[in-house]
Amino acid sequence: MKIAIDARFFRKSTGGIGRYTRALIRELAKIDHKNQYLVYLTPEDEEEYDEETKNLGLKTKNFKKKIIPIVHYSVSEQTKFLKILQKDQLDLVHFTNFNHPLFYKGKFVVTIHDLTLMLYPPAKAKHSQLKKFGLKLTMNNAVKKAEKVIAVSKATKKDIINVLKADKEKIDVIYEGIDEQYQQSSVISHQSSVKYGIKKPYLLFISQWRPHKGIIQLVEAFEILKKQYRILHKLVIVGKPNSDFPEIPEAIQHSFRAKDIITPGFIAEEDLPGLYREASAFVFPSHYEGFGLPPLEAMASGVPVVASKVSCMPEILGKAAVYFDPYNPKDMAEQINKVLENAPLRRVMLKKGFHQIKKYSWAKMASDTLQVYKDVLKIS
Image (cartoon, rainbow, N blue to C red; front, side):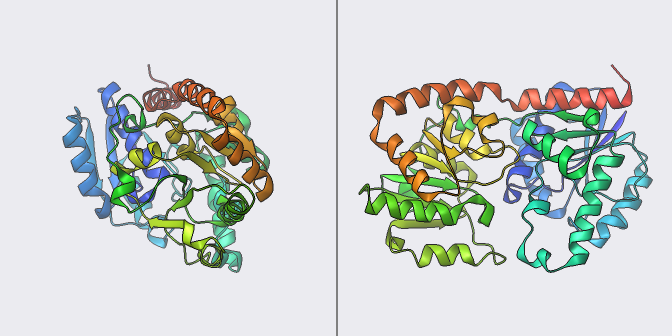
């Protein structure tokens, strides 16, 4: 069978979807040598794709790349990409994100990572009825016309059913995995904190700079930790400012503890394991997530995790994290301080964290996804 994978999010700069796409292709190449795969990439993805397949020494004879200069959420995605899909005569397409050509009539599977763009749209989109309509139309079309919908957590599946009114019978929950570089046993610290000029001890946050990530409440909680609990730690907020949300850098700049808040910007992926391992605790105050990779990466790196008790976090992190109300900076500060002050608690958390991460595997994700392909195509 000829299966296409929309891998236009392959490059590392695309964040979590890119990591998912890279892992899917890498693991499928290990286990499926029967089906023929066509991998759609943008020119920006090609170099990293070639490098990864070469370095891993994968047997990818049944994987062919196709470079298409078509960006996401564009008119050309609806027109030019549609013509390409039709011309390639595919048995199945896997769209690794919800965006897809609306008029494509072939069989396809879609992965929906979360409903962030619907529930927490960028400020510009809030004022554009056309964009809002287009987003809703694309998501609804994806879940309605797809043969199968892959949700990355039970929480995401619930959102898809409740918000998009999708048929629950066509939604399969397939968890994501954790890259090996974060595993405590295989990671060597590269003194990332020194490289980026970060002094220990520090609390760590890694994610996009968007309001629903809880960064503003985290800054408020840090102020409480400094003033009330007199912690010596710095707060490291990794990520890049987003012009759609100027309130986040403003909150950091105007904080009375601004001198203790470090914003190193984008951190190279190879430096992240070391940055995790040198942190005193990883704090994840997000109001909404589809899966939540960063706290699992922290657990794999041997770092205690303090996280929001909302959305998918309790499902994914289980009993290995200490939870707080993300809308309550006082509660957040109290729980963070409890972890910092209680050495026996930290030891228990690390033990539980190493046990929790065993539930998640990119190999299993790819195996389960391949089974979805087989079920749709009715092949063994």
